Length: 275
Ligand SMILES: Nc1ncnc2c1ncn2[C@@H]1O[C@H](COP(=O)(O)OP(=O)(O)OP(=O)(O)O)[C@@H](O)[C@H]1O
Ligand SMILES: [Mg+2]
Image 1 (cartoon, rainbow, N blue to C red):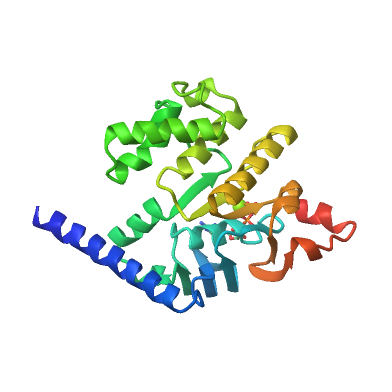
Image 2: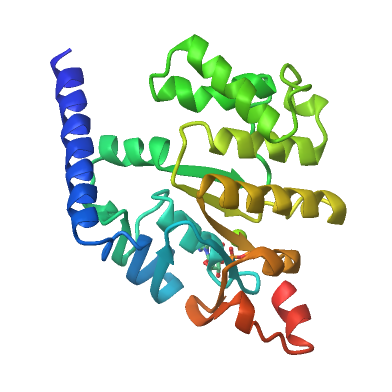
């Protein structure tokens, strides 16, 4: 019981610190609020027996609040690794990741869990829905973890599934849905606790061209209408059309960052990048 109180207290203090930070930042005329994510000198090495694999090699990246950012690069270039660092799913070997000016490395496991539950929504290539649960149950699960009461969770779940065009599929289990519909459920789930960031790792990787296009349009709509920052690792060149900026990554390093308006695709490069 005491442990639980201590944990609640830590979360409370953390939320208060967050609130104060954002108040100070607004007083600063938004000088620091411009970036929702800052990646500083991040190195990630994996140890494979005696071999060290350097998956990220000194990455620096500032991500604007409300932008749609695509991370593109050949297979093995470090996209998913960067995704895991930003999402707090794994820790850098060196360097730091700041979410809303909070250094993720300084958080204890409860605080990290709080950020992951409330600030970030995750979408994966393979949807990662829970097979025995209905669409609605999959979407309400993160709300249950966040302590939302059952009635409110249900109401919000129906709302989110309707938003992604699945109001008529609430009680279907994942196997009773098409791939595109499963990804829509995953998108609704990622929005469950109203996050400021959605991280999507190859969200169209398992979908056909048309369905992939629909999912991309849906993500763009959510980005525009709800102001949620979308960070997507992808091979999908259709994503270029709707991204505000594209980060090209190769061998664990940022090769270049382009705004959509200045996008210069060289013939031949596309195929290589699309790997
Ligand atoms: N858990 C791990 N242990 C060891 N090496 C890893 C691990 N995860 C990734 N790597 C290595 O790190 C490098 C970057 O991998 P990562 O998964 O980030 O690439 P990616 O750009 O997402 O590729 P893809 O487009 O194929 O998904 C690769 O060389 C990979 O082999
Ligand atoms: Mg990957």
